[in-house]
Length: 379
Image (cartoon, rainbow, N blue to C red):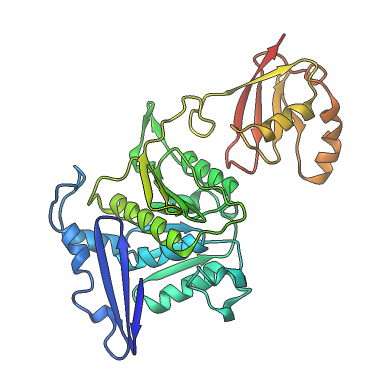
């Protein structure tokens, strides 16, 4: 909520059920940086124990300093949910924020994406959002990236402690989930916890929203034609920001691991745990079984990968190890290679030389890593 009177602006941020932070921005010589009680509510959470604190939590006045100076948080998306996330995180004390968004501001965004004004139409959402937060909340340094998340490599994502997502694209959600999974390191089969970069995922549509914390899963509300109303964005962003705060400070045990919110007919919320699939495409590290018939054409196999609810691929490229060498079955790009391999689409599995037990490596835009399949011939 925002209330203003003359030169005084009061921002109230509802952070789940943990705390309500009130920040007063006073126009004139005295700035927010000089206001001694600015972090009083946050300090109450960080400098004393409580009944809901994480087992590893150690109360300390240094925790706030760590959060402000050392914690690097990446916000993906600067739309309706992203604007709320940036505001919430900045007001909670996170100063080292980064935001990435490939989109530009449209007139239709202005009714709910409150960091933008009419004069900003046509400009990068990430850049304008960063400028607004940096100008309005002193001490906060938001770094914008006007680009796709796929434009950056693992070194970029490895530089962050936490990632919070406000995306409306399932493809992008699956990609960032796969990227963070690819950064995990194992020693003697045991996960190195220092390689874990938690993903806090939020999604909204109309009066519905979902937020979640996961190291292995990604789920969200699928955008169709109904943008989320401002109140829904605010609720889900507050829930996500709360989880970021919990993970960053251990001040409270994180949610495990999804919360559904619906206020289309009253208010309904439900928290539940997603169970890991043993054959998960993203994190099982076990080749997926690909059932095929010898008479089946390659183009039919590709269509199945695209239409499957499990894989939902967009433009899969396939390679296989045949007779001791890697053979490209079909690639969508570059155009010259696609043209050369196009005749393979009409060939059958038998004509391509694929046999039972062979492995096919499939690359697709929905994942930063290759998905491995093991061929099983159906008779």
